[in-house]
Image (cartoon, rainbow, N blue to C red; front, side, top):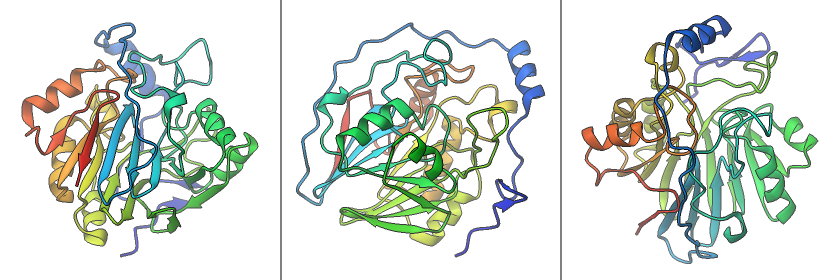
Length: 310
C-alpha cells in the first residue's frame, strides 16, 4: 500500500489527524495541572549484553526510555539511544533522568545499526550519538530531513527514509512506517523533518519499533502491509493530561489496543520509567498497564532486563 500524503507547504503532518498542541496550550497545561512526583534518581544494576547472538533467536534488552538493544544472528541494532542525564538542549536544565541506564555505555557490544525515529531530545541525543559515531562501525537510519543535522555533528553515515522506504542493513531490512507525532528541536523548526516508526525484518521474522506515537489508523496500515509482527515495542508513558497529550502519546490502554490491532505475538513497553515528560510519574504507566493487560503478552521490563524470543 501507499501511505497517505504527509508533506505539504514545507512541513510534514499526520494525515487525517489533529496536529500537536501549540504554545498557548502548553501554557494552559503548565498553569492548570499538577504533575505527579517521581523519585529523584533510582540506581539500577546494569546488565552486560553478549557481543553477538549467533542464532535465529532475538534478544531484546531495555536500556532505558525508548532505547532498546536488539540482537539477532550477528546483528546488533540500537533504537533511539540516550545515555545523557537530561533530554534537553541544556546540560543544566530540562527533563532529567530519574532512573539510570540498564547497560553501561562501555559495555555496549558493537552497534551495526542505529534507528532514529525523530528529532526530539529524548529520542535524538547528540552526545550519545557522537559517542556511537566515534566508536565506528555504526550506520544511522533516520527520517527525512535529519541527515544535514546529524552530519553537522559528525554523526554518520546517515540513511534517510520516508514512510514506505526500505534499506538493507547487516542482518535485516529496515522499513520506515508512519507514526502519529511531530518534530522540532527549537521554536521555528516545527515539523520540518519527518517522524516515523520501523519494521525490522530479519531471519527472526518481523519486529515493530513504534517509537513515539499517538494512537491512530497507522497500526492497521502497518499490519495490512507487513502482517503481524512477532514482537512490537510500544510506548506507554508521558500521556497526561489526555486533552494535551493524546494526539502524540499513547496511554497504556491505547498501547494494548495497538497491540491487538497489530496482532503482535508479544509487545514490550517502552517510553516510560526514566524521564518524566508529562504529568504522569515515571512508573504510573507501568502500574496502569499491568493492572489492565495480560503480562505474558505485554512485557514491562526493568532497565537492563532482557527478553529472549526463540
